[in-house]
Image (tube, rainbow, N blue to C red):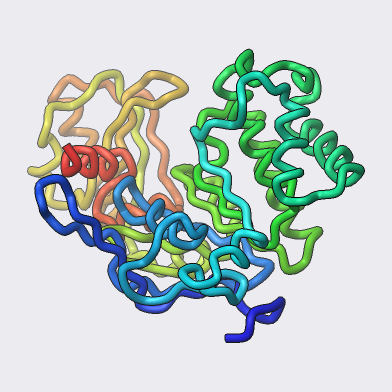
Length: 338
C-alpha cells in the first residue's frame, strides 16, 4: 500500500505475537488479528487485562515487533518504517510518568513539543489551550514533582496532543481522573476528531459509557482474538433477546446463590463505588424470572434496596461475548499471571 493520506489509519493482517515466560512456556498474546481503522475515526478497543490490548498498541506504536503478520500505521510498516510511523503518532497511557520532576507543567509541555519539532509560537499557544481544557492553568508553573496523581495524568494527556498527531493512541486516558475532568477530556477528544478531518483516535478504556459516547466503532478482544467489531448500536442490537436487571442489596448473597434458578443466565456482583451498596447485575431468560430472584433473596434474608431494568449496553455485549464482566475477567487474568 502506498503511504499517504489515502491509506487507512491502521491496518493489520494475521498479526500475532508470542512471548516466552520465565517458566519456558510460550504465551500467544495476539492470535491472527485482522483490523482496519479508517482515517477520521474514533475507534474503541475493549477487553479485560491480558486480552491483548496493550500488546497490540505496543506493536502499532513501534514499541514491540510482531512475531508474524503485518501492521501498517498511516500506510507505513511498523517493523520496517518505524521512524515514519513515529513522526505521525502519539501515545497517552493512563498511569504513565508524565515527565521530569524538576520541570514545571508548562516547561514539560514545551519540552515534548520540541521533541516533535513544533515551532515555538505554535507550541506556546497549543500548551495554553491544552492547559485550559485540562484545568491545569493554575498549576502551569508548578513542578511536576509537586503534582497529585490526577494532575500528572492530566499533563500526560495534554502532552500527547502537543504534536497534533495524525493518529493518537489513548490507552485508558481518564484513569484516575474525577468525573468532571473525565467529562472535559471526553469532550475534547470528540471535538479534536470532529474539527480535524482525517485525524484518528484509537481508544482503550474500561469505562463502557466512555466508549459508547466517543467511538463510532468498537472491537472487543479477548485471549488475543477479535471477538466482535461493529458500531456500538449494532453490537447491542445483535444481543440475543434477554432481560437484564440491576439490584442494589444490603449485603452480599452467599456464593452460588443463583445457580439453582434455571432462568438466571448470569449474576455478576460487586460493590458500587458511589454508594457502597452491593450491586448485582442479572441477565434472565425472561422478565418473569425476576420474581423468583426476589423470592430467593428474601428467603436468604437479603434486603433489596433498589431494582432497575437495564437496556442493552456495551457492558451487556462484553459479558455476552467474553462470558464475564470486566472485574471478573481482570481477576482471572491476574490469577493466570501469578
